[in-house]
Image 1 (tube, helix red, strand yellow):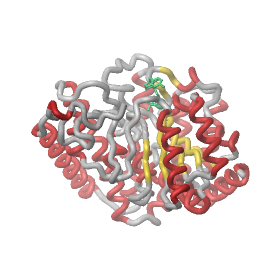
Image 2 (cartoon, protein in one colour):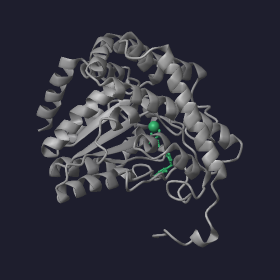
Image 3 (cartoon, helix red, strand yellow):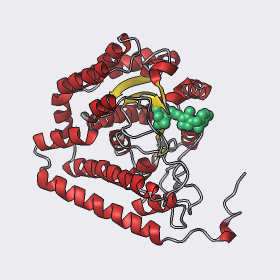
Image 4 (cartoon, helix red, strand yellow):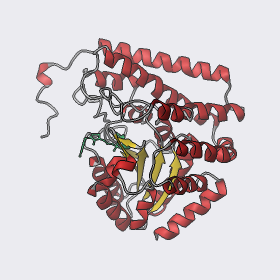
Length: 378
Ligand SMILES: Cc1ncc(C[n+]2csc(CCOP(=O)(O)OP(=O)(O)O)c2C)c(N)n1
Ligand SMILES: [Mg+2]
C-alpha cells in the first residue's frame, strides 16, 4: 500500500538523511502558494547545506571509480551540449534541439544506478541520457547532424536518439507519449519474467496529461517495475509550473494511486542516485513502481530557438549558483576522493571526446537517397 511504501521510504530517507529534507522543502515550497520565486532557491540551498553531511556519507559508501565516472559523465554532458549550441548556431545542426544543461545530475544520478540490461525511455531532451546509456558521443553528434554515422543513421535527429542493443528506447517528441510506452516496456519485462527495471523520464508539463494518470494507475495495479522520473525543471516551454498546475508537489500525486514516491533535489547527484537505488530495490523485489519528482532547473532556453523572455536573468543566475557539477566537485574534494588535478584531467578527457565527436560528425556522409524509404514504419 502506498501509504506504507511512502512511510517506509520516508523512514529510510530519514535514516540516511537524503529524503526527508527535500520532502520538507517541497512542503515549504508548496506553502509559498506555488510561486516560482527566488525564495525557493534559497530554501533549496539551505536544505542542501543541512543535507551535506549525508551527501558526504553517501560519497564515502560509493566506489571511487564510479564517483569519478559519474563526474566525468556530467562534465561530458555539459561540454557536449555547449558544443551542440555552438555548432547549431553555425548551421551544422538543423531542426529542434533541446539542451539539458543544468539537469545533468538527474540522468547521471539515476541511470548510473542501473544495470546495463535495464531499460530507459525519455523525452526529446535526450542527448545526455543517450550518452549515459552508452551511445557514443560520436554517434549522438552525428545523429544531431542528420548524418549516416548517427545512432539511427541520421534519420531521427536531436529528439530521437535510440539504441535497442543498449536498451535505450528514445527520444520522444510527443509530450508524455513515452509515459505510456515506458509503462508497456515495464509490462513486457514482467510478462517475460526478466529482472529489468524501466526508467521513464518526462518533464513536469507532461504530468497534466491523462496518460500520466492512466499509466501510474496501471503500473501500481499490476505492479510494473517502472520508475517514473519527473524532471521538474519548473517550465514547460515558456509556461512556469505555477501557471499550469494547481499544486507544486508532483511527488504527492502518486499517492492517488497508492504508489511509493519521493521528492528529490535534482541538483544533488548523490540524492538522485540514492532515491533511485531505493526505487530499484522496490522494483526488483516485487515489481513495485515509484514516482520520483526530481526538481532542477534548465539553464538554457527550452530549445535553441527560445528567446527566453519569460524569466529573469536574476532567476537563472540564482539557480546557476546551485550548479550540480560544482556542488558535486565540492563534495568530492571535501571527501578527498578527487582534487583539482583530477578535475583538470576530466575536463581534458571530456574536451577530447567532444572534439572527436564533432570531427566524426563533420566527416560522416549524409544518408544515401536510397535510404529514404527504409526504416519507415508509418
Ligand atoms: C502532446 C504535445 N503537446 C504539446 C507539445 C509542444 N511542446 C513541446 S515541448 C513542450 C513543453 C514540455 O515541457 P516539460 O514536459 O516540462 O518538459 P521540458 O521541455 O521542460 O523538459 C510542449 C508543450 C508536444 N510536443 N506534444
Ligand atoms: Mg519542464
